[in-house]
Image (cartoon, rainbow, N blue to C red; front, side, top):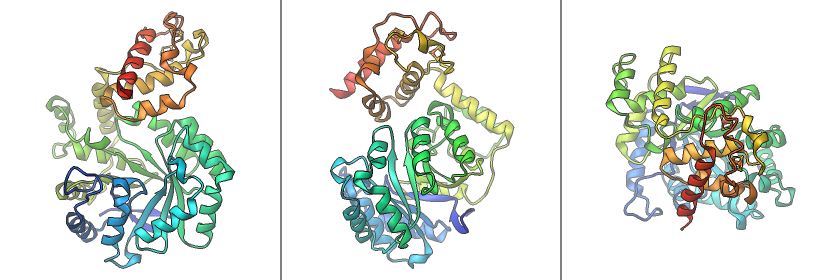
Length: 380
Ligand code: SF4
Ligand code: SF4
């Protein structure tokens, strides 16, 4: 196992995410504890020392199961991370109750890493609202040693991440963010990584293989890569891309069976970051993967001053591209819902003022109509 330094702590570069644990049946909370026990034992034997859970994973069962399994090991032999669910309105004024319950569920008296979970365009307002005293309480827990390091996870926009860092940059020590070679441009992860570098914030990566979507590549795409690294498969390319960023401390992979764990561990036994040529090759694969479905918006923003409705067109296109590529999903509907109603795709009046200046000749009004239809289907 390769390790990364985090404030003098030796963290395994591969962490075990526990959002997709093996199940006994269809029910998300029915985790196969014996299978998890075997996976954790193997993970320990191979040097993994970072385990990431959250209040909401598996309907709350992830924390309980990880608490049960990890308590069989000395507490100082692993790092445990969990998160406060600021997206659950009913819990916003109960940070103390949630935190105490988490300690109990995880059978511990401290968390090594504790995160504001899912900072986005809506939750940020709750997290920044002093009435809920969330930051104040967590700061206090850090002071008394029950939180060793405080951070946040996010699927939010670059602007939201900046706003959060501007407010809490003095108390957060790391960020957990969705990062992989596809989201490098699709979700503007490149700009977020640059921001973290600039602010000296270590990064913990989630979704390095995009929920499994990057685990397989068409033979034609893979053959281009094989010319550079004949032995590497699609999963390895995805992990090696993430490994190439020095500010990444831990890469979390949500492993749902033993085979995945074994395969992932093998990759992290060696530090083999991509060189420039290899990075260009994998990013070109990303372009090809998205080319069929993505609109080629360059975010030049020429269109903005031509929209009588004041719609943030490039931001909508970014979400549209993600939504179409993912074949749906929750991210775009969530972000659109957070926008004022008169700024959503449905507010477009198809005047085509934007199209008259778009250097990419994107049929923006048609995209807005299509997106509106796709989102309405989702809500049915
Ligand atoms: S077509 Fe829609 S997005 Fe484009 S300028 Fe008109 S209202 Fe704005
Ligand atoms: S003018 Fe075209 S390319 Fe530029 S931001 Fe608008 S949609 Fe994107």
